Length: 80
Image 1 (spheres, rainbow, N blue to C red):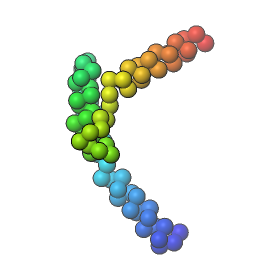
Image 2: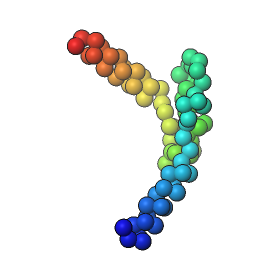
Image 3: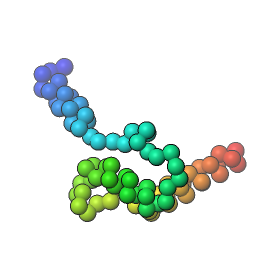
């Protein structure tokens, strides 16, 4: 590996260390309303947005689509 490649890889690793993410222990172990989920995700991951003042990290539509997809997957597994 050349020095330039090593520098590039180290730069990438350093930038990954700066990413703020949600640890499983940070997520409340209680049922939440959809607005609480979107607020929680926005507050924790706002820095990951391209335009933090405008972009939403997670929307109600996204949650609904994930839930629908999960039900379809579970139903397909059940039929087999």
